[in-house]
Length: 86
Length: 86
Image 1: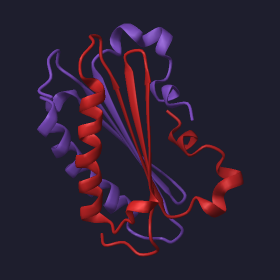
Image 2: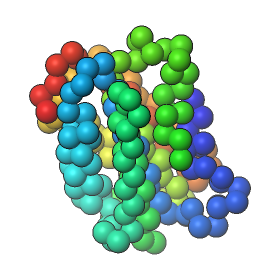
Image 3: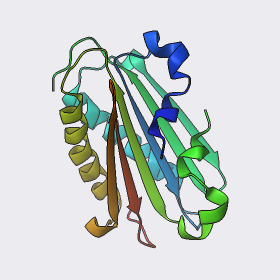
Image 4: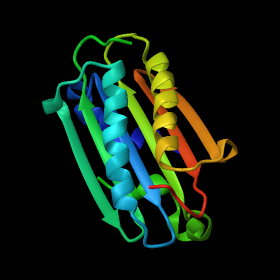
């Protein structure tokens, strides 16, 4: 699996892509359950977890949620400050 | 951004791809910091968060960690049971 493609056009955007964390959640299920609610709830908890490890500016977090049939995806893109607390 | 490509060959694997959650963390930074340690630590905490929302069998969790230059990626693939606790 080519995870690098997740970052898109790396060659072009290398200079602006430094110091960031991207998180992608993709949930696929066979019935019509509350997958959007699950993803939304996971989003909150995962952001809380990330904040425990890294100082993040709420304004530097971008979220993108998408639904296509039985697949719900959530992308979290976080621009990190120069220094981290890890 | 085409999140669907994260699932790979959907047409072929649709029958076995039901009820699963995939999480991808990708961390890119400009210096030689402890990004692998950060990702590893995020992995533990995110798995704990997922367990709060969904009953998961530890044997149904697959992890894939990869490093390419200044980008560290972690893929977490979780096969979900038929019912969820959300």
